[in-house]
Length: 333
Image 1 (cartoon, rainbow, N blue to C red):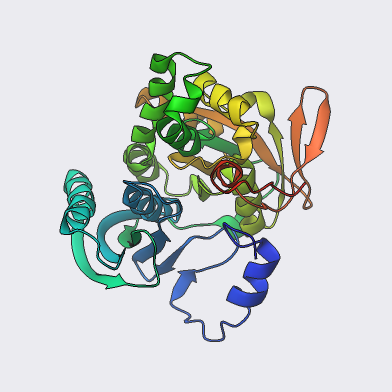
Image 2: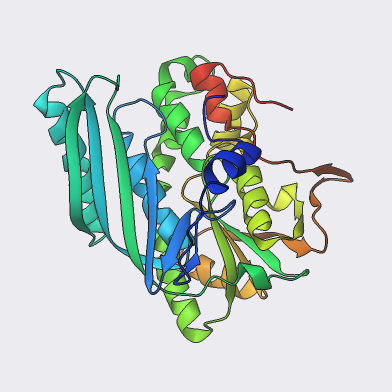
């Protein structure tokens, strides 16, 4: 199998199909486009480190929390599992736990449980975060119909562009000014969906039925997230490339590495399906969060991206553009 997230057909065949028992109390569960679960009034999600670099535990932290929010929940705590290579220094462990504890304190999240072990089977620290939350809104993805708005917050390729700018700064500064690359690297501070959650609390309090579905934009970028969300909604979609927000610094980083920003990990951005996209966009913008209506749902299963006068069809996500840079892995066409 290829490095990165499992292809959709493999995920269905080898992960979903073997599941036999399904509790009637679980109203939202593991499926294509559904990265969290809702059991009664509890929401839970799990995430792990994706790439090997110092500080990658924060990717797992934000990914787990963001999945709680996308599943319609308000996070209140996490459990942490840390696997370290044999003979790791205690300072390495203290750095990881220090980062996690500081961010948990900032977000008022309890660290509920954990496990730490040194094992010979890992070559770099591997951190898995399980997040827990309470239900804020009922996911109504099965009620999505054609003509609904699709709203996106922040910018495409947010996390991937920032991490590339940070880890490949020396290489990138052979073409771009250092200040420009550092600006791109600073976008890693936008990885959290907690600002969006604050807005959603107000919006949902005013209209509990305003949000029908949501999906965080992470592995596979905005194209991958759109495909997965619409798969969960069992519908098609139409999107305008010029409406998908992107930072110029991220575009430049992607051009340097010859990768597609719309297939680049965008953790920190959120997709939402709603009947009134303008109202939701206005609420986000009033809170200082960039947001835009990037398309709408359609009948059938076709998912089309409109680029000027041309159209291209989305296909199931086949990887993330970060894999091209980190592993030299070409993405299948």
